[in-house]
Amino acid sequence: MIGQLIMTGIVAGSIYALVALAMSLTYKSSEVANFAQGEMAMFSTYVAFVMLATYQLPFWVAFGGSLLFAFLLGLFLHLAIIRRAKDPNVLNLLIITLGFQVFLYGLAGWKWGSEQRVLKIPVSQTETVEFAGLIISQLNLATILVAILLMISVYILLRFTKLGLAIKATQQNETAAKINGIPTRRIVAITFGISSVIGAVAGILMAPITTLDPNMMIEPLLKGFAAAVLGGFNSLAGVVCGAFILGIVESLFGFYISTEFKSIVAFLIIVIVLYFKPSGLFGTHYTRKV
Amino acid sequence: MKQPMLNIKNIETYYDRILALKGISLSIENGSVTAVLGNNGAGKTTILQTVIGLLDDQPEKGSIFFQGRDITGKETVDIVKMGIGYVPEGREVFQELSVLENLMAGGYMHNSASAKETIEKVYRYFPVLKERQKQMAGTLSGGEQQMLAISRALMNRPQLLFLDEPSLGLSPLLVDQLFDIIHQIAKDGLTVLLVEQNANKALAIADYGYILENGRFVASGTVEQLKRDEDVQEFYLGIKAEESVRATQRYKRKRRWN
Ligand SMILES: Nc1ncnc2c1ncn2[C@@H]1O[C@H](COP(=O)(O)OP(=O)(O)OP(=O)(O)O)[C@@H](O)[C@H]1O
Ligand SMILES: [Mg+2]
Image (cartoon, rainbow over all chains, first blue to last red; front, side, top):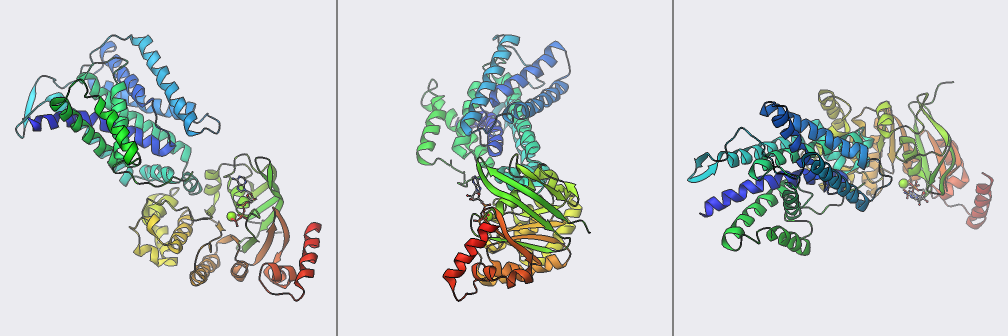
């Protein structure tokens, strides 16, 4: 039983991990938690839905199209909105992302209504596979695998590519990056694009588990945020660990203590971490130079 | 006349409403080492940051030419691309990147094969960096971080190198070593603009010098000329004059004149 519960926690944790990773990446580049991350993911998921349902495109085309849209949406947020702000401080930027969130939420509600739709994906939700004595649905297995694959891709990008090096350099010291010829503004914009793509994958994985409606990402965003706080916003590996810990703790809490209060776990975690270890479990406490 | 490498004409730079550079003109000859000397707050860093384009909308007045091309108000990235390397005050290495990654970031504008070639050249000046390739830059000693910052700037293969107080916070012995290497780099053909408070060390390797006070140059010339100047001797090189009170008065008077 406990194995099964942990498995459920890992599935949820995968989604939280992607959301947390997306938020942490842009946070490190811009010092602001992008609260529009969830709605951007939701909107991108609708784009996939429209391509599938309205235009009857094959799944992989819709999937690719949705990710491309997400990337452009991320660029747009940075180039057209965030960068336009004059001498912004962290609070201004936070409010800008909240504004963008409200805008996307409203737009989605107007365009697609609040009715719940079904995103058709090529894996089954009812068929199961057995794995090390545990039973897991195809969908859940796919969720875990896709999430892990994406995390590995992000790791490879940051660890082994020139773009990744430029992203890290810009995150650590923007002035120093500039004087080494790194086009920092373009790099930050690309980081927003990448984060948005990661969020969109989370959205597409999330939609079949729950349903597709404008509210779908509100809870995952808050959980992802909690996971990022738990792991330490500055450490990408940390936020991923935080996400899996949160997913598993939630799952165990839901079974052994109370299903109704399952959601409270995330907020308890935020409060406890902010009280006792504000830099998170794995976060280092270095100050970024701007 | 030969075209100077860098030609700064009468620039004025403001921080909000405070005038930090009050009409600075400076010309750097190809292949030379030029030292700008001045005390804390004189405006040395401000000159470098203005030229490299780090201060938004500055300079307010004046113009800056690099190899005959107007770079006034251009983007930092474009100026760097044209061939100016900048070693900022306080090193500013990427703390959480390894030594090697710092150097690769410095070579961002070149492809990785050519960057790797440059790294080998840079290691010849600073062999200790090669030993520490894998180490996080934030864990290097101050001297090693300074070497890394210089090496990182060399990675772009600049024609002109700005050095902002390389001696800051280093032991006298290390300063000697570092200045020997800077001297060698200059002899190998790089034009250098060196900003320093340590006038003795700077003038030992420079060809030309400028003395900056309160955002203005109060003296300039070849190093020989500056070394003969009594005021420079007393106030920057620490050579005692006999009547120091009168000298101060004379100096103040002279400053007002400039
Ligand atoms: N960001 C800033 N905002 C306002 N004033 C500034 C700023 N940076 C520098 N100044 C002021 O401009 C003047 C010149 O500063 P600058 O840093 O260029 O001096 P410096 O000669 O490099 O000094 P040091 O040797 O201490 O590095 C100083 O009076 C300083 O207070
Ligand atoms: Mg300075």
